[in-house]
Image (tube, rainbow, N blue to C red; front, side, top):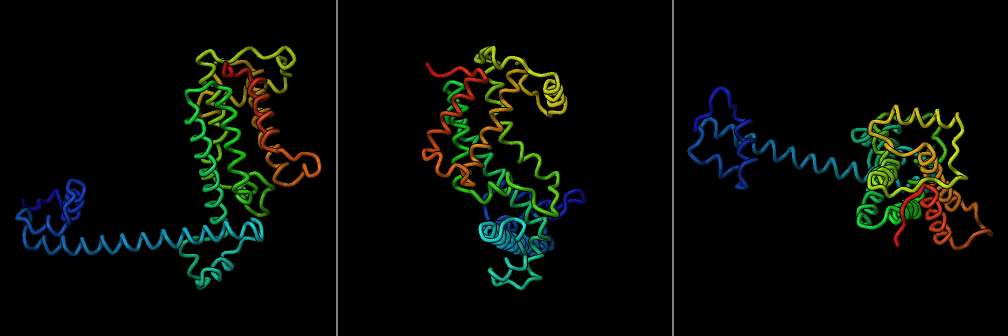
Length: 286
């Protein structure tokens, strides 16, 4: 087939690659394109191959930079991160590292997004593994997945849930990944409510002050997805309390605030998670 005006060599090559598992060199020696275009296609094949190798190398070096950044979080904290220090550890000249990560703030953003996505994947997998079980069991499994991730990645945990880094303002790139955990928790309750597996709140927790009702109305209004549709403000308030409690317990544990007070953290954490599920009104296993 001769290449026409509307189908250039580059487009032909890419279409051929997408439709065939054969090497490009076998495709272009067939009598489907002219000799001139065969030469052009071979040149393009070489360019694509070289570009692919370069892209792989770039990804490898970028991953090494991020890994070293995570390691340095343990040594110097988020505020002390330095691309020059990372370059020294990786035996790179300091100017070279900026070809892969433009600034300290970009490094922080990539580490934050990576941490949020890692944690988000952990909680989503935990919920998926319990999807056939009662909503309360899903909630407890989700809570444990957060704690398990945090205890395995304490430095990344405090990067995203600790004190703000001086001089750093998180960009919008962090918003989506940062909402994966609360979204997953909310979806447990939303699905349970839809299946009529959320009980009415206990009388002691049924009253929500007017100011808090206003906050809940705002949350419902600005959310990009329906937030706990069909449930009362008391249930939403219980979910918010439970969400904050999860991270409060984890932060206390990781920062050693419970030293001399509590030894069996996992068991205490599970007790608190089950009490939260009950307070929300999630049906438990019979």
